[in-house]
Figure 1 (cartoon, rainbow, N blue to C red):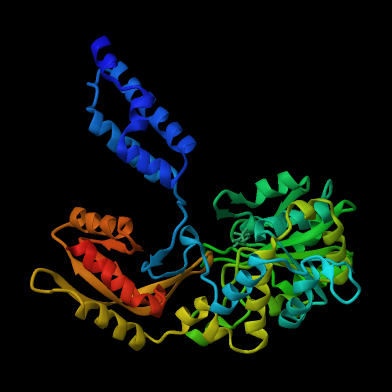
Figure 2 (cartoon, rainbow, N blue to C red):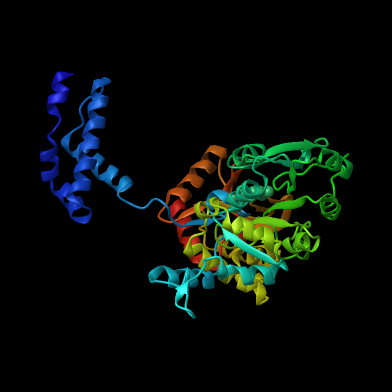
Length: 457
Ligand SMILES: *Cc1c(COP(=O)(O)O)cnc(C)c1O
């Protein structure tokens, strides 16, 4: 083993190598020396574990490989061919071109983020979305924070710290990614009072739970699951009526929250923000990057007095939205006001694409493949909405299906597609690799086809 250690070159010798010098010219000597040191260190550990010392060339290869992994940006574009429109792991909603342009304009220079150009005095970042939000939703007031989890936490802390919040047992849910209502409640310092049962809750259950210490009636939209059968839940209007009568505010966590009616697209009804506002709910929270189709954000709309309390609550500063998201959010909301959200917001463009159109693109992808050596066809399938909206609901779609020998071979092709020069993510089912054009932006078709050809080569 000692002799193996002695074969290890010095860091200096590695740094004098021509390939390592090239790396140092692209990056920096400091960064590349650190990589070289880490590489030698890990080889030293492997030798101690009984392995042989690699050759000098292998060591240089390892340095180059480690540099390629470490000295690069890891967040990159992915083509989503999964058929899940709002894919949380793939970054949720893609933005409209106009929203991206608005972001870029604000990003490249300075902006009036917190500056009133009329008076030349300090302004508020909240003003940039308030008017748009109230016009779109019909609420008196509104503002944006970092994400919907932050919106819910802020509302609970500002309004119910050391007080009680009444919630139906059927809505004490986990949304995913560690967001569990009972945990968020504990974190906020509010005391959760669960009422009813998992499947049935009545107004009387809420009413009995209201005491001198009750500060909120909470409704949480059961975003990502459905209970059916012997169930009963309380209508929002009933909850609002009870809240009014007993002087307790109602907070509605809509999760996705739609601004357009999903039934127009052959889907079940996803609760709309406007409906909650019209029902008289005091505060409604929803996400910016689910069915709204905008940037990551948490939107809170409702009664002016409560919104003002939330804006002024100290935690609001820690949860505030950044200027780039704000720019994209403004433009996305404007698409709704202009009545062209269906055509401009990618999430809605994907949802409203008719199956014939998806099929035409699946055929186009198929025609680009060399089918002498490949079993491929287009088949009918289903796309889903995702992002914790409309669980179990599907849109009829057309898929490009590539038949492999078995599931392992299909998985290997899926991996080549994910790790190619442009990452494409599809899904594997029973020995088939399935790609759904619905969730691929039409302008990406050409690139998808070359990625596919590269992976099949
Ligand atoms: C998605 C969701 C959240 C969390 O929203 P983020 O924008 O991901 O922070 C909270 N509540 C419900 C009901 C949700 O569906």
